[in-house]
Length: 437
Image 1 (cartoon, one colour):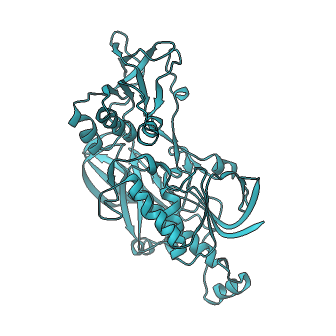
Image 2: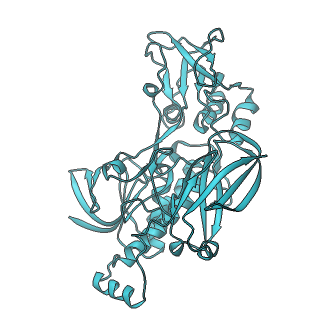
């Protein structure tokens, strides 16, 4: 069984950034395992621009952004294997991969498997199952990679970012997008995508609306849209018929956490991702998570930033535990001589998602192991206007920030200086909540 210091599951933007960061922080034996035929993940089919403004200070397409990291991985000599499916990870970090059912042993593991689209079967849409129904991501691959146009008359259900981007892409390819329907009373995508992909092309966005019927047996011939009430139930008498030959589904993303659940990790119900601490370490020591497998991001730049932090944290874990070729007894002896305290057994300060906040990442914080400042990322559960985001240490408010608009499609961030937490000895909880006048 071959030994590695670090195994990274997934060769998309998160896995690549984590690998580069780990190598730059001293880890030598790194292996990236990618089930696809090439590195880069979903970025390879995202040919539109808008990537890299935060990371590279310039606007790139998805393939260009991925190429920057692939080049770094190759230049640093990081080992990777393609067409390799990981089928199981054991608690002692043995990774079983489906390519001759080989096993490898790692000192630490970073989970970076990304996410998948919610399928039609999870949406309970009535009607037959004719040809012409695609997830937005599948349609994106067909158009941008395979060179096929899925249809000419299109309706899109769901206003996630992929659906919005595909509304523009299909229009540019000559198709007619009749409407984008959204079950919720607000869009699930970024404001800039609503403007650039719908408003600029005159494509209507129908909020509080869903598909209640699909016409056609062999091929989609049309769909029926209807308004929904506050419980999401169709309102009788509001039906509208839309002739079309294609229905694209953009109804949310689901983190790929089958391996995480197989490991028995503590999971966050709101995100379907693992619970992590300030180091992005899961409930199993030495197993880290980052990117869309942890929580769905809106910008790939934030994925790379988070993955770099995971790579650094994994490197520190490995080096502290005698990894990267070091003698374990020697490392333990050095740690004791330096008077270091192992913080992994301490849960630390619990971060609570209060009123209006769906979740936070991380869920626990050990101040002694923080960087100089820690970013707490979160999403709200509804649209708020002229509100405040507040942070409390136990029952004491320490921050109240005015926000003109907050929406579920936009990830929010608050930063806490390390010194602030160290000075607040004894606090048990940090609560983030939305408050209105």
